[in-house]
Length: 345
Image (cartoon, rainbow, N blue to C red; front, side):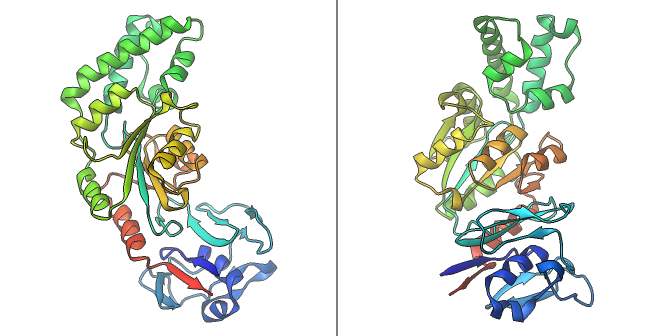
């Protein structure tokens, strides 16, 4: 049994996989291009509503495709490219399951993970926009200790060097000449200041409760996975009304390695009894996205604070503004209906 998964919102990625998968399917919609690359027939006009029916499953042509630089070897077990990577590349994963996933910010699909088993969430900046509170606390306290000769840190500095990091790593970066006890005392005091402010100021990201209801209605497992101290994490979860939502809370500092290493997400999968092949992640930081990708799961980047290009470079599958974003609900509907999965015997 060989399984073919086609993204309904893209054309050329599906061409590669379908061309390699089965000659019957190839004869329906595809023909080989130069140098062994597969090409889709050029439609009369590029329109998103143009459809092709394959094995009674409907998918979308995003645009006419005349071949691209991605090459898949049906006899190999590795991903490789031929020529230059396109601006919005597609990655073909080879093995027993032929899976094609999109990695452009305008393409959004969970084509390779149906049926879903679990959804994992970061906390700071993901379920709540808490980064401004962290920034304020660092801004004030670093000035008090004379960091950078008393010059206040900028938000750009915070996003690049602090946001999403584990406190041990942040302390080493900020205070390389301080002993561990002194630097961690600073971090503990900063977290106490954060909690005092967050208790009154933190709000859920738009659409959070709508998404949580969808997850609950689908019976999916769920975990919160964070580099924040446990006291912070529990406060934020409670503040946005999700105390009874998560099955488990995983703290990076309680794992062998925190994000950007995959350990916290791998631990969440183990505790939940879920498979990486049927789980995805919501993250807002490059550190968290790298951890999720390293753990073998697609990661949806949420652009509460961090620049889009930073999240995409870290490996985000696609980006959303918040949990109301139509791109997210299109992808969830696609997964829920299994509209893109064709099984080829």
